Amino acid sequence: MKRLVRWSVALGSGLILGLTALTPVATASAAASAPAASSTRTLVEIPAKAAIEGAVEPSECDEDTLLNDFVLQTLLSMTPEQLAFTFQHVEALTSVPTYDALFFGTAGDPDYALESHARQLTNTFRDLRRFWSDVQSDDIQLLAMHGDVLLDEERIAATLTLMDKYELLEEDWTPEEIALEAKTIAAFMESQGSFFDNPIWTLNAFAFSGEGEPEPEIAALPDKLVFGDGLLVAYDSFGLGDVGPRVIMAHEFAHHVQFELGVFEADPENPAEATRRTELMADAMAAYYGVHKKGLALNSKRVVDTLVSFYIVGDCSFDSEGHHGTPIQRQRAAEWGAALAKAAKPASFVLSAEDVVEMFDAALPGIISG
Image 1 (cartoon, rainbow, N blue to C red):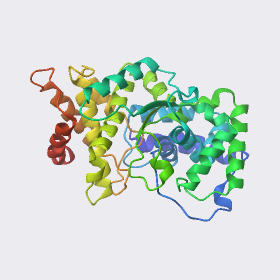
Image 2 (image 1 turned 30 degrees about the vertical axis):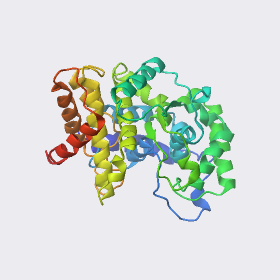
Image 3 (image 1 turned 60 degrees about the vertical axis):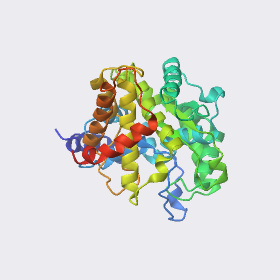
Image 4 (image 1 turned 120 degrees about the vertical axis):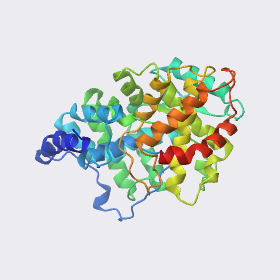
């Protein structure tokens, strides 16, 4: 059965009908009084938000992936009241944990310390620095994002305030609306037991560099690699906890390699093509590290399967600046990186990051077209 049909049946006929029958939960709606000045800017993508919205209006392009199924099952496990609250506050619930870690997280702060898979991720992070030794990476901070930020009214408000300042919210919010939203979310989470720790709020991992950002405050933020608890829960749930976090870290670390090499500065005129190139390249570099004898030395199929599962909604937004490439293109990119690792002569020889980038760019047309 196509995902379009399954999601429509499961959510459209069941959960959505339940939503319309509910008494509205207290909500702070920015749309009620804010100017209709929608923003399209992002510093960090929020895949869970797109997945939740896609549950209401599925795309013809949606593909069956482990993460897609995880999102669906997570939504189905919510009570009607929790589900209604999620849809009413989806932007803040899915964005605040990510942007709180981006704006305020620092290495050594226990609020942003790795908990789940801490040793595994720390060791992989250290090993990636060694593997890609031709680029500077000792200034990257490895952090975690946790759902407990949604219990803290002050942290929610501070994060939304900065998101509004830098036009990262879909609409402009007044200080009063932000204060009400923060109070409403914190109070609801306090009343719902462990709902604040639902994995969907932190189903994300991202790399960040402020280099080139026009706002001095954002440009001054340290380089970061942030892992969400929810993503780790997801990979544990479908039996990839031993491989998934390490391979996904390799993908995000590859973005930092790209930052250092200026790959993002060499964008073609089409921004969608630019994002597709860097995302497919990160898949390829992660697979190269994951399969290489001097990297993780993992089974190539397991690495490729992990990377292919690392998107939540089907990506047919060919003209979007956030376009990551289609599922088959991501699979080809990962297979290309795995094959490159297997072809190393001697097996212990590691190509420089610059060489891998150059070779990938030469292979990219074939990866895209097949």
